[in-house]
Image 1 (spheres, chains in turn red, blue):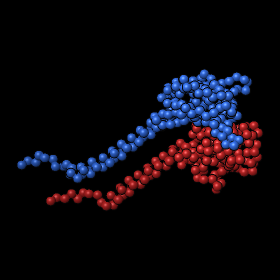
Image 2 (cartoon, rainbow over the protein chains, first blue to last red):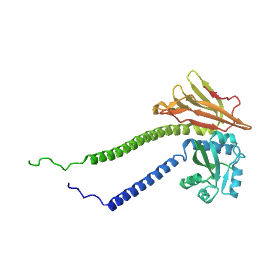
Image 3 (cartoon, rainbow over the protein chains, first blue to last red):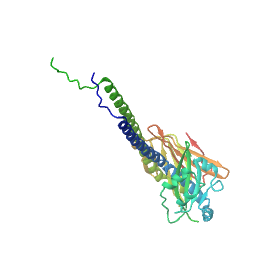
Image 4 (cartoon, rainbow over the protein chains, first blue to last red):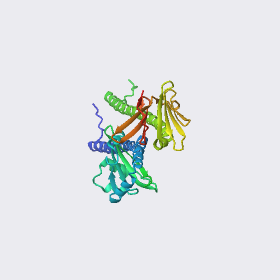
Length: 160
Length: 168
């Protein structure tokens, strides 16, 4: 019986499989990070969240809190607006988890703060903040829906 | 006997392995195409609904935030919710959300939901109170491809005592 001995060598097979494996892993890593990025961007600056944040802005302006906020911002870069400024009923109704005010143009400096969680840092890193000249602060809200975090920002503009 | 058959064919196991590999690749590619198609139609639906929402928000939000609401009336005959604003100069402006004729109109400027195959259901008004805080929430229920995408807009201005919840 004549046997065909023209097969592949073990080394050739291993090299070929390794090349294919490296190639597949790199494609998987690239696509999964792209999909993850795309999904997280879908949760930034959603139109409904922007209008909800506008409601908070109107509440701050109507209740003349702008001066207090500006005064507090002179002492620290980041201010968390708690129930002394925004009643819990409004925050709950708007599904706002946390609400922050920062000094305009200094938003990126917040990345150095250790007290900020990773989700918020990702948003700060990604967002290109465009601030109005008349802005006294940047209002950033963290929304929580279905165990996912959403972020949006608007300028805090108004007469002091 | 003269050799007439070509024996350079494939063996059965070679064919089986090739078919198995090819079917694995085809099944995977098919599922990718199906999921991409699903994602595409979802993105298209989201675009349509966000386009409509942007139009409505842009039209109604600035005055909804700015002016006090004078009264809100539910007209059951034509299924219209009519919101009248008190403009400082003494004149009034009217927002109409018609679930009967599927449109939203502000001061006569109409945006028709049906044009974009968006379903518009009966709007709701809710007064939320807590101690001294009182806010008014207007919900305009919208759906596209059986997915709910409501417009929710809030007024934190002074609210007329006569205005009550509307949920029909």
